[in-house]
Amino acid sequence: MTELLAFGTSHHTAPVSVREKLALTEKQAQALLQELCEHTAIAEAVALFTCNRTELYLVVGDPVEAETVVLGMLARRAGIRPTELLDAIYSFRNCDAARQLFRVTAGLDSMVVGEAEIQGQVKRAYERALALRTTGPLTNKLFRAALAAGKRVRTETAIGEGHASVASVAVDLAQEAIGHLEARHVLIIGAGEIAELTAKALHQRGVRTLFVANRRRERALALAQHFGGDTAPLDALPEELLRADIVVASTASPHALLEAEEVEQVMRDRGGRPLLLIDLAVPRDIDAACGLLDGVTLYDVDDLQEQVNRHRTVRRVEARRAEGLVEEEIQAFARWLGQLEVLPTVAALRARGDEIVGQVLADNAARWESASPRDLQRIEAIARAVANRLLHEPTLRAKELDGEHRHARLQVLRELFGLEEDVLIEDAPPAEVHALGRR
Image 1 (cartoon, rainbow, N blue to C red):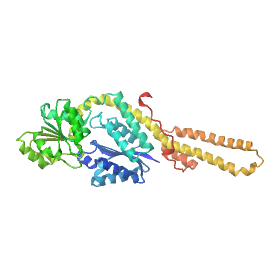
Image 2 (spheres, rainbow, N blue to C red; image 1 turned 180 degrees about the horizontal axis):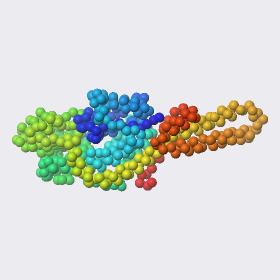
Image 3 (tube, rainbow, N blue to C red; image 1 turned 45 degrees about the vertical axis):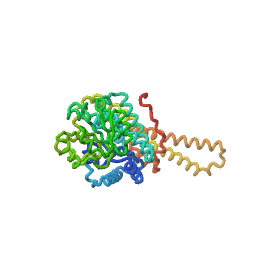
Image 4 (cartoon, helix red, strand yellow; image 1 turned 180 degrees about the vertical axis):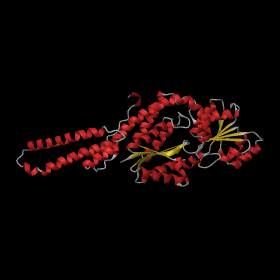
């Protein structure tokens, strides 16, 4: 039988030193999805990656084999042994896998509960897999339902109000570390979504920022114009470090942009002025050794956790409401998922009945030489009515099976009636995606 599998790591299970090894670029994600779906154990695949998680949502025939395959692929890409990843990896199946994605999409599994950007990240992950044709009936339903559930949570609760992003929490941390920010010179390395959120949080506190970017210079210029800042090329970074009070790094670079040796030289030239470095990137943009230098304070995404915990108490009530909404949507998905297992068995049961009727009629055709065509139609109708009446009760009972006992009882039913056909998920009727606010 086909199963849904969620496999990954996040800030809950692994430090940034591990997460950065498993982080994926856009090209790496595309290659991984294609490699996954080339394996016979995996039918569908979607990859979700953010600064705090790398997760794979898969449709598999044998979950144990698929877990082994995926663990090997991730370990190989990270350049480490599979056994080194075991403590950092989690795995969920079927409704538990769906619950993981629903909670992630609703912002309930984020470091900053209710963060705004995760919904867009899930949507882009799904669209990437759609474009690569690595999705299918189950993952299509899963991600559409998860996105709808996430939208419902944000519409019906206040979980996303206030400081709801890693970037805004980082700005709070900077203010606690060095006081008022208005007169500070802030340097942002990068021009992506996190950089924009950081600039927005700083702009709201009256701070002008300088963007440093290389590949995305036009994007950096657009952000600078929008938030009243300036831009500089990446090769001007050493000079800008001399002026900066705060540096926020958030690029997609696979290697560090600020090395300890370079920052040490900068500190010698700054005449004792302290420097606050905030690294929001995974993999990290700033060498961890920079935090050991005199006058340098370095925070990475894991260091934001204490700050995040303060906000969590404020959101606790809204999070409970959101959990309840997510659970409602999970139950709806569970009912649909259960039908994927029941409907093929019911279809095979009905097909078996039709097959038996056809065989009996064919075996006895010679006995009815004198029967008229009308009589033959009546005989066939009676035979099919008897078969349908016999199969009616087993069909109803199969559709009413609960999740705990469904698989075992369906297996008994298949064995009793000799149902060995492997009916694909695609043969099941398409699931309806209901408008979530109007049930």
